[in-house]
Amino acid sequence: MTSQRQACEIRSDCDVIVVGSGFAGIYALWQARQRGLSLRGFERASDVGGTWYWNAYPGARCDVESYNYAYFFDESIVRDWSWSDACASQEEIQRYLKFVAERCNVLEDIAFNTEVLAATHSLEDGLWSVTTSAEETVICRYLVLAIGALSEPKTPDIEGVNSFSGDVYFTSRWPKDEVVDFSGKRVGVIGTGSSGVQAIPEIAKSAAELHVFQRTANYVTPTRSGPMDPNLVAQLRKNPHAVRQAARETYGGHTPLDIGTERFLELDDAGRERALQKAWDGKYVPLAFRDAYLFEANAAISEFVRKKMLEQVEDEWTANQLVPWDHPYGGKRPCMSNAYLQTYNLPHVHLVSLSETPIEQIVAGGIKTSKDVIPLDVIVYATGFDAISGPLFAIDICGTDGKLISEAWADGPSNYLGTMVHCFPNLFLPSSAMSPSVLSNMATLAEQQIDFIFDTIDWLENNGRPLIQPSPESQERWREETLHYAKQRPGALTTKSWYSGANIPGKPRVFMVYCGGFKRYNETCYKEIAEGFPGYELLKI
Ligand code: NAP
Image 1 (cartoon, rainbow, N blue to C red):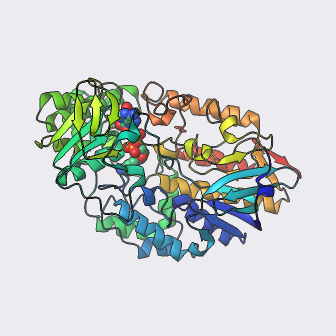
Image 2: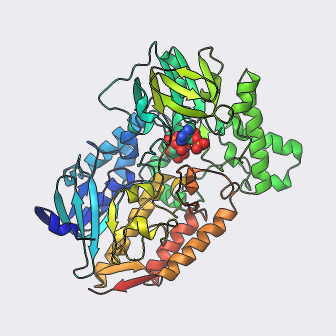
Image 3: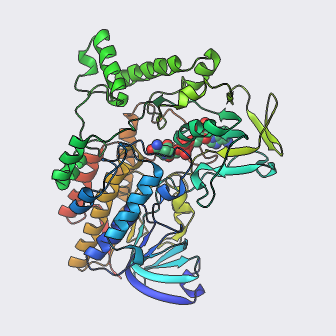
């Protein structure tokens, strides 16, 4: 592959390039500044926010509580920002990220509307050369791709997608400059993951007819959206650094919660039912038991949620279709909504179960299933993402052996500690494969990984070592450890989910999330620094 460096007109140099301006990108730019490194930032959107910029569909909201899903590195940010809802909306989270970017003075470092197209490393000078859609090549020593795990929309794999004559929207690319009006329209929504589950009740409010095309049912439990608890806010503001530290000591990187205090194995049937009901009422059903991670406990949780879901839908056929009988709770990403299931009790909302009547093709006037053509004015694709590796493969990232990362990962992701890849020195990948990523609190993870990345860079600078990459042995060990913990997670290896690439035809089936827990992950990262990076190779130029 020829170096992108030769192909471009303008050159500039800096220590660090940060791509993306979501939670990880904003914090990375701030960290680079704090450590006296020169920097450039690139963002393909017109504003900060990352996933919270693009996914502006009606009803978009975070399932993780806002007081949890936030930065804790700066006391004044914690003190000066007030969330209006315990689970913030997309609009509020994007506004929050803009507030933080302004507070951290990083906006001026970011070139917006600029996509990074390629990055090539040369061992001759130990530099990355990064090419952008602005026909600029920027040379840097450290490259941080804070491009998110869920930022590359899945291309719909349905025949005739371009044949439809009505309006088409994607939840993952919701228009920013248009108020989408469904009034009086016949709308079809394809997909019932977290995005579909949130959008469907909102669309149903104005659509004349709504047809939901469901391929696989998902677990849906109540959301914690609602007023913020002022006592909790006061407690968090008292000592943000302690909150941050405590979250890193947990399994999922969340503020520790005082629920699920009893153990499944120590309870009789009545006790288990009582604990499950208490957790359901408190809206924390996955944490009903302290030992909820056990397969037996998970089976009880799955059965309990199915029962609760059946109770909410009036029509028996619809209820049975909406309940996930095929996988355990947590096998796929569970959804949260207080309105989704009840929406199917409205007379103008119809479920099309694709397991019974699959889509044959999209036609000009609607969607043709094996049974009939459903006439539509609008189709909303809530069909998800080419998750985790997809965003990386969208950039031509070329390593020291001349291979693209998509070639290096042809059989599935391979890295060490979820952040670095052999033959791609000084390339850092927050929220990528084989980190706690999407099974943890992404905000806590963004801070932890960016801290780790910049502590690594500090170490290199202080020890006069220009280049670092993981050894192949460490990558293999990390692959084995990731698999070891995945085997312990109910449904991880048996459910078809985007966690393992099963939503993308032809993608290798590899469980891409580290399930050993946030605490263990953080400790393993910092053990490397403390011991002088035994799991890495320190290269010379
Ligand atoms: P998703 O979970 O991957 O759901 C995509 C949906 O589209 C699935 O129901 C899938 O069916 C269906 N689908 C895909 N291709 C299809 C086809 N060709 N024909 C019919 N159906 C098709 O995507 P998402 O809902 O955008 O959510 C992705 C992730 O983003 C979530 O899991 C979550 O981590 C995050 N998210 C979080 C929130 C939140 O915090 N509330 C909100 C939105 C998203 P199958 O299941 O059969 O593949």
